[in-house]
Amino acid sequence: QQQVKQSPQSLIVQKGGISIINCAYENTAFDYFPWYQQFPGKGPALLIAIRPDVSEKKVGRFTISFNKSAKQFSLHIMDSQPGDSATYFCAARGGPYSGAGSYQLTFGKGTKLSVIP
Amino acid sequence: NAGVTQTPKFQVLKTGQSMTLQCAQDMNHNSMYWYRQDPGMGLRLIYYSASEGTTDKGEVPNGYNVSRLNKREFSLRLESAAPSQTSVYFCASSPRDSSFNQPQHFGDGTRLSIL
Image 1 (cartoon, chains in turn brown, yellow):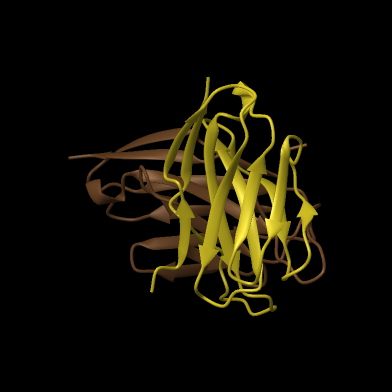
Image 2: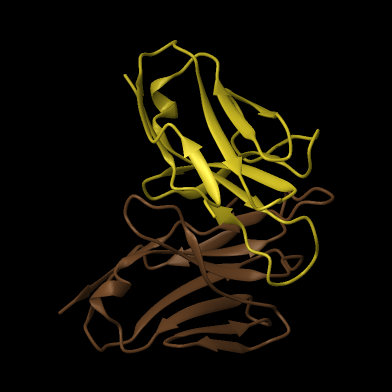
């Protein structure tokens, strides 16, 4: 059972355009929703995160929109740049492997974003 | 400040060989994690350690063992490597508290090929 579903798998956007990546979840016990950015040959790095009591969070050109009733959240990248080309993972904290004292992240399968000049 | 350091960065093994992947963090984090990343599969949790002295299975633990050597170090062992374990392995760490802004920090991975 896939806990966090992410789409699309790949995305090509023109420079200056808007990139949109969507995620959906089932488990209402998730309490924190981060997005990670990964460049080739590197580990994922936290990009932006949101709590479920907030509907939107913006950091620079990156915005998370969160719809608690629909159990969906999305990442919008405004004015996309070639340097944004990377793989993006949504994640949710909590889930079946959460044990006392640790904060498990369940990841989506990733979206490979290519921003073309 | 190195963050999370993984060694080795690359390794090629033959089927049946054993190997230990090393991970160390210098952020005084309590919790540490091992993930594997395969194309189109995202990151899947293999094992985690909530604190020094404890380890628990994640989503895909079969064929692996772990050791939390001390607060800084968390190793992953493949006792008898199989081609299905060809993957990129990531170690991560996080503080042990409920604060919102406490993300998992990842190393740069170990790329493992098993022939």
